[in-house]
Length: 399
Image (cartoon, rainbow, N blue to C red; front, side, top):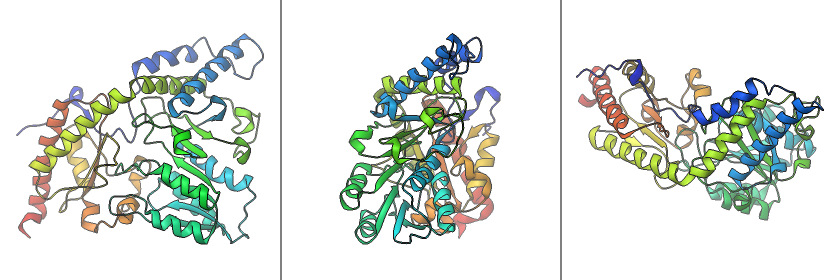
């Protein structure tokens, strides 16, 4: 069977890493790459034009998550938003590494842009603890409750949806018990969930929420942090006082405009997009499970992002599958794009209790609005051939 594809037949199933920029978004950005080049801080018409564009984008971002525009601070992306939420809170609340009784909480399956700031604080002597998850990647409520009842908690940070297996956390419940028991601040990394599922910060009852543009068909290099009370944060960057002094530096105007337009489009089409991608994803999962022996879906099937399909194929290595699929013109991944070059077992799958064999053979497919059922069928053919070939060479099915 010859499945080799030319350049025009490439199939992209790695939308959790990044998404293509919508043509409507590009068109909205173009004027700010051309004649509308003023510095938003300038006190003349050139500056006023770009300043108004930023505020218009801020309204679109706020509308998508049910917040007020003045609660939105633009950043360079989700990583900076997470760092600002975590380190900015610690700095503002005056927590220091000599105060061992004050505890910072996160989960064991967070994105590296959350784990690394917490680990950095831990290395400095801060009291940092991580709640456990179950085999579906769901935070164990009893694990968080144990910390909340025994410790003096100042900050809890738990993601809305996992970037690897797609499990959606019960954030409203987790934030509720956090506020009721400890009165701690609750931060949520919502980068993967934005534009895929409904998000309302008032309903979730979170204090801080991180967002990113390039996961929702907007440009790279721009994100945002929702803060219910900006006065509870200290800036990471000092300078000219942009973003009401919470994030200094001349604004990435065309990026922010693109982010705003992507949020506007996502808000209008949220239910329709969710339905389309979920049906495509469910069809993909059903076909894979019915045609490829000895494979398993990782993560929750009920509480899952609509575009995420994460499998384990014991007997083969995920990196080898990626290489073979790439020869067919198919893009998938073994996990988070920003850490895929580190060649280490997934901390998410380890925390979920998967065996080394299951972790090594894991693969993430994340679908997008540009994908079609015919593409799914072609991926299944290529994937089936790839798994059979790799297992034949390894002798897995003969053991």
